[in-house]
Length: 121
Image (cartoon, rainbow, N blue to C red; front, side, top):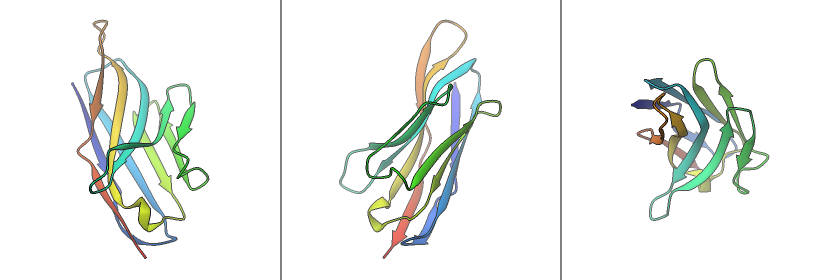
């Protein structure tokens, strides 16, 4: 089992910045990909950014140039630096761990509980 705990959400004015953090803990050997997804009211959950254990990153077009994802493989943390925030970035942000190896030949995906980000205009 893996537990993902997010922190860093909150209320910020448009143009401001926030940094989200997610700590992965539990019984596992490795995590292939760590990422951030978001879900706004009435909308589907969507990918924001993700990063592999090798450092390869992917970003949603809507956040490119504004958000930066990073990862500490030794500590199993993933971060999302969000700059130039817009009201349309308002959503619950979820941490995701994909391809988690349990040491028994199995890989699973896990989700955090989510953290609210609200950007006021």
